[in-house]
Amino acid sequence: MQNTQNDRSNKILCNAPEPPVNLTARILRSIEKEERKKAFRQVVVSGMFLFISLGATIMSTMDFDNELSRSGFLSFISLFRSDFSFAIANIHEVFLSLAESFPAISAAFCLASIGFAICFAARLISKALVVRHSKFTAPSFS
Image (cartoon, rainbow, N blue to C red):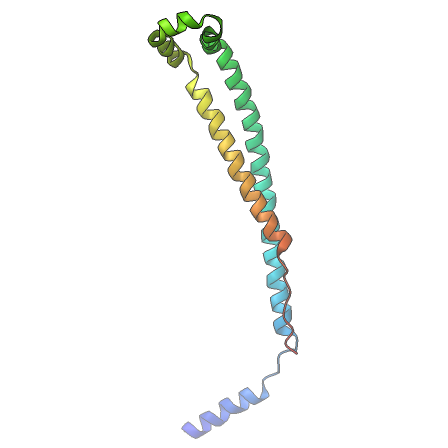
């Protein structure tokens, strides 16, 4: 019984068709093509996020500039330039006024958007370099 079963499995294996000669190379090329597509999509998505974060950076910088003007912070800073002796004589009150009038939320948004823009720019550059310098070549097994 064991012998007939082995004969049957040998017959099936012997009659199996041979795979094409370049099957491995074609499979590797299709995998590499998909990897290139994925890398290109990542570059496009990173570029979109960079574009959005640059827009947010411009808007938050303009808002921060407006808030600096409206809050009187620039007026207190100019006090050091216009009447330095008065500012030094009342340094404690001047610093408290500076701290109270500084637009911290606008500054935080501005710094956060700049940080995001830098991160997305670094990610875009790294992904673009990977796509540019990748040499996808399938080895030939002939």
